[in-house]
Image 1 (cartoon, rainbow, N blue to C red):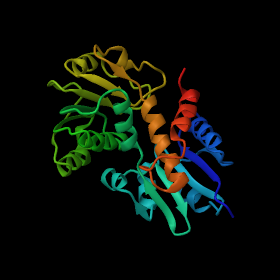
Image 2: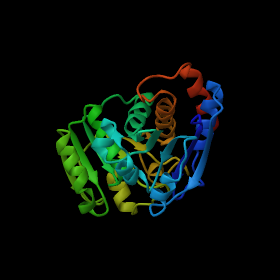
Image 3: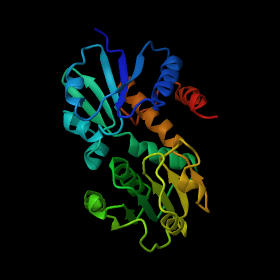
Length: 272
């Protein structure tokens, strides 16, 4: 039975634009693959994964399933191992192979925005996407990272990862005093509104803002940011390109045939 079925799972999931992106890509590639969305929460994930038959090629995973997908994978790429998060499962006869395409998606999106390096970075948030952002900025050559979270104890794992990556890092609350950074990355859920004083302080000498949120845009934080603000649409696009590479040939770093046309088709369905 050919593996032609794919889907994005998460909770909530109705807002996901992944079906549009993937459909545009497979249409351009001339592939008759089905890509749907399904609401799956953490409790249902194990049984849902076990129920898939041989027609299934892979899954995209979003909140709150990335850590569970990491545990379910029989093999993981380096970015998945570093972050403890898997957002892509390639389903094989040997079991699911896990990948993290968020790291590469962030790097690609920043590069597209003209940001190819940053010495000092501030990361807002302490979830799975924050871990991906941390690995991404390490690959951009960052040396110092200021981690911010509502509850700093939640960021202990990020601090340990920063040390493993050779970064000088600290963890503070959102309203703690700030030092100058080249780049700020917000990994907070869409719709998050920070206290006005905290947002104002974080924006001071915060460099460019890369906000993984993209709807609504501008985000509450971007509206208050005095420097350049970049939405998460680029990350959404480029992490999906990397997922499609995995589903197509198993390697997120190897380009697709006619990839420029594929990316153009995908961009057309998400950009105004």
